[in-house]
Amino acid sequence: MTGNNRLIHTPEGVKDSYNGECRKKLAVQDKILNTLYLYGYEHIQTPSFEYFDIFSKDRGSVSDREMFKFFDRDNSTLVLRPDMTPAVARCVAKYFADDVMPLRLCYLERTFKNNTSYQGRLKERAETGAELIGDDSADADAEMIAMVIDSLRAAGLKEFQVELGQVAFYRSLLSEAGLDESVEEELKRLIENKNYFGVEELLKSQSMDEALKNVFLKLPEFFGPLDRITEAGKLTGNPQALAAIERLKQVHRILESYGLADYVSYDLGMLSKYQYYTGIIFKAYTYGTGDYIVTGGRYDKLLVQFGKDTPAVGFVIVVDQLMAALLRQQIDTPVSLVNTVILYETSARDRAILLGRYFRERKIAVQSMRRQDGISLDSYRNMAVERNMRNLLYLKEDGLIVTAMDMVNGSADEIPISAYE
Image 1 (tube, rainbow, N blue to C red):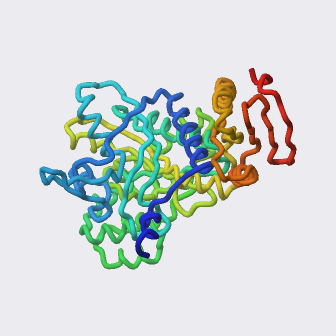
Image 2: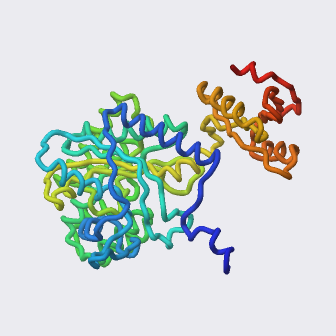
């Protein structure tokens, strides 16, 4: 690809959005944000790029290789924001350092991940999310899940499932096992992939209590309804592991009060690449997309890295994945697109401007354009059809008569301009 051809193409992992597709995406984002506003969340915006250290490995965010890095004039390393959670945490620590009451924030932003290893994933993603800062209760966890469900329903999605896990359960077992870091990483990968035989083979070479080994072996099996999860509690006496299961039971009871428990299933084998999560984690899935449309969880030890020791829980809806699911499930998002164009000769400009104002004052979208010399009226008709416009209003000469053309049925009527006064 060379020359001007290269200039009109986008880099790998990003895409253009225009016309109806763009309007539908904006409408869906508005519906999600309005849902979050109804729960009392206030909007926050953070910069598109921040210092590299905000998202470093020590924070438990994305890997160094997945960041778009560059330098400022002072030679400081900056990155395009790959993850909203550390950015919000930094902002809260700066502006709400002494605030001890719960804080509810939401956002609509873009994140940037240089994830060439993930086929089909965009490198620039639109994300809408919420963070509840300063509340470590099961009520806060359940509120997050409830908002996810209500947001997806508001967007038009009908069939989806929220899977809820607990990283504290798994980490308490790891602490008890005392495995090497490399073994921990491999075990995590095998459990996430629900590779039963791989887990068994790995643990054969590890020295640990047989009862604990049995829990690891069965961990990939503990998914489904809540009673399937509670069976895991019978296999361990680890206090932290039992507390993690009890937390899931508390969240479930609260979701029953919301009337939303049927949307949720449970998975103790669910883990996350984000190391800052400390408690519940969750993802939402639906038909028509091979990846999750929502991800989130509790991160009680992240803000302390920025100087504010307070618990937090949050989630993000990946809007691009959601839009793909809506499209493939043939769920339409109604939007009001412009379907009328006012075409006028130069001599009729004044009346064309008044006619355009007449429609806009009535909240009807119209495009106004002067007829260019040498372009036929049929060409403008064809343009209207190609752009899915229904009406073409043509003002010729002094503009006293409007020729109203219906592009659908092919009719044309002459209407006095006075009819629009």
